[in-house]
Amino acid sequence: MNRLLLEQQRTHHIFEKEKLSIINATPEEMHRIAEVNPKLFGTKYTRWGCQFKCVKCNGYRVHTGGIRSLLQISRIVNEQKYEHRKSCKHPKWEETWSLHAAEIAHTFVEMTTARTQTGDTDWTDITGAVITSGNFTASRKYLLINKALCGTNSTAADHGLRSLHGSIHFVESVQIQDLPGFDRFHNNMWFNVWTAIASEAIKMQFATLASSSHTVSVDTISMISMEISEDLIEGTDWDFHLNTHNTPLTTTFGSFANVTIQPAVHDTGDTYWVLGYAKLDPASATQDYQSRLNRSGEATSTNPTWSQEGEDANTDHSMHTYGRTFDLGASNNTFTVQCRNPDLSNGFHEFSGVFVLNLERFKDSNEIYTDGAVNLGTTNWADLAQTLTLTPTEASGDVLIYGFFTAIHQFVSGVQIQSRLQIDNADQPPGQSSYLVQAEAYDNNDEMGQNLITVETLDNTLHTADIDADATSLTNSPQYAQRQLVMFTMELAPGNIKKHPSTTLPLRGEKEEPLQEEGTNALIKSEDDLYIRQEEIA
Image (cartoon, rainbow, N blue to C red; front, side, top):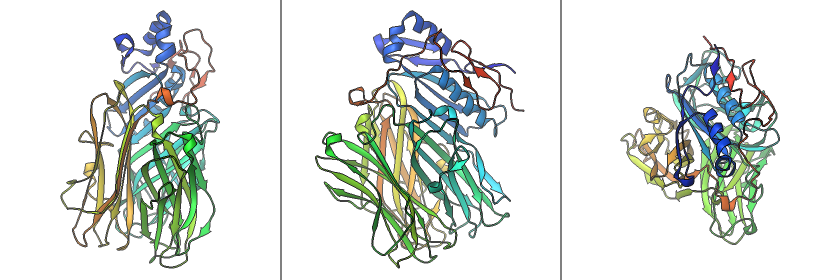
């Protein structure tokens, strides 16, 4: 039946200028207001945002913001809702629309309803795990972060997880793993900087690769895209290096992906968020394969670290991903992913990546990192591994929250270490507290990271992020170490923006290229034509 795309919820916008509040204004009403007072919209409030979730299944949530065109954000909302309808019939939406001065363009897709696949050894799309093509502008660069819990129902079942652009998979994203215990989850996170291609979406796939009788499952999926080429400057505000050399490992650490930050591109004391990953091909099921994030130059550090024994020498492709913040001074700093096999010279480095982002380019941020190992207890979620607070300046806006810690397993068969991320004492993503069986070690040298990430809309009061953890047994004294939390707003810091194109709100009568809606035959022709002729999926 015919629908007005934006009719499901009337929106609530708060504008700070002259303490003006506009309550329950629809996007069309916003345009009428803009025609009367164009200065209000053409200067400060120039970027659209929308946060919506399905309250029928409570398993799908999207945050998108920093979008310069009402036409584009209408397309994004329509496409993302269409993707969810593939798995949730007749969804019910709760949504909020907003306008912001200078949010960086971003989209966050969260799925907390498990997806499973049985009896098919081919790679299969994870229904709903998509950032649709409308979120991207061709030739612009985007930070992509895809994270999920992935597991299987057998201890001898190879299973895999990978990311794609369009129909082409990112070779460096492919993780294939055997788990040491059934019904366990491996904490998988991968990132990349991608130059967008017209009409291509970002999606995730999974596979059970050993036998058609096995089941692979994924849960707590978080997908993030952030447009970093338009408001920020490559080599100054952010940088990325991907190493694609297939290189044999030795017993000493070899250096692979690396980024050097020179003091000329930042102020003394600026904080950088540094992400690293190594994709390794183990050649033995009894040897350890290690990687670390190495800092050199102004100061030295070799943490975080990751150590993981191979499980299947023929098929495994393990992914080590970690993140940490660093305060930089007046000298060069180089961040390098280093890898080795401490037991014997075998196995291969396949891919590695390093991404760095200056957090001072965002309006509000806070971070904390702590070294040192701490013994875990067995009471569910009773160990506070890390905590951090942030009070955003804006009355409402999206905040990215990232957490990491290293789980030191001291291998005992059947013992797991688990973690959750909470914002203001609530699971984010929701449902983490129900997962009481998570990561399990392969041997007594394993030190494997656990990544946690979300995007939340927060107001300008104090907010607290926590990483909680526990172990299922005290045998051999399992521990956690190298824990990190970082929070930063998507709102940019105007005084620090080096590249900020003019962004005025298009008013009625302005021409814009029509957008073909994905999954429909409808065409949005102008701001006056917001009706999407979309059939309900029965």
